[in-house]
Image (cartoon, rainbow, N blue to C red; front, side):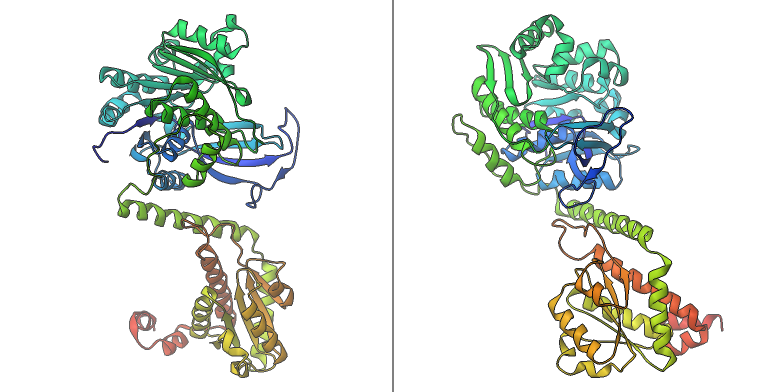
Length: 541
């Protein structure tokens, strides 16, 4: 990590939010159907976590931020670290945790939600870890931020003590009711120390009411009561769509929230806190700070997911909702970590995506599809016919590989150039031959023309596609499923997992054909007289 000053450094929850859509939040002993989450099926993974979220929103408003603590060296951790890198959030992480934190989030049609958390590595962080591994990062920051949510209270207390000893102001997000915190996070003494150690305490209204029942349900009365009880310089109580209440030197009052259509209220308080950090950094008066924080909360609830995936879009939405003084915002965040580290994380995340997608594909693949393909090839070979493999774009490369693999393992096969097929190359296809056509979408226009041409030549058709209801699948005599939900990579667009799926189902088909034909090691060696494969084939002659 750099030694340059930070606007904010935070320790606490960094979570993969697995979001589910449901018509309503269910009670005990109820059942319900899950809906589609933004075209990704019944569940979609988002970046989340109280601390990571608010640092992300602060980064979108130009602050230099860092997150520190423990995480795991697993697929979920790589997913989160890639997101940190995209927003330029520096990281001081020890990757020795048992698992990265995960939250199962159920969002209803009104934007309400129920959250179930598995804190993983965050809950394994100790005070000694903080003192031993992260003191230098804390001392670089203008503000330390932490939370009462998933981080053990003793670890939060240690971070606050380091910051206060260095003269660094502290901010604590009290995200869960104190009674819940005491059941899972630590002792009453540690909770008291964390709350008293906050220069700025930001409780959600439900948590504030549990600490100051005498103040009733008025958010401003709660803010005043907590400030008196714990001696904080500032207390800000968030009150959902109503906005917030602030008790601070020179200002006590409520700041009305922005009226927006809520899609998902998850993380609204975290986004609020990111805006508050930006307001403090730019020296806004407390009432204007509340306006900026409310604007961030409003921008957050307009979309699924709590973390700002697109920095430019997030900033633009915040500024549309903000009606305070102009802000001298810093540049939009870029990729701050070294390129080698970032590319390594991205590379590993693609491997994880491909493996996960292939595992899901395996659960869908059954005997029927392969049996149908084997029968077609068996029939063609019975009268001396051949297999031809074709595709357009990236599937063309898969087709060349598959044709070579079939031919080298006992199934005569050739590559058919799809765009050349309608200019005479379809002449390589004889009646009764089998053409294997590869297309992820199953709708590629150039491939369609080639398929219609070879069908006219009397060929039988096997489709390898990611879309079982596509034109290609409907036109085929047999279909091999190669569908994936995710491709992997920064944009998720370039064919990666789909290419692997297409190649692996064709490799599987070639293995079945190799077994059925009785292909021998001697025959393999005759086809591979050179190279290491040839040597290996001869070794056991």
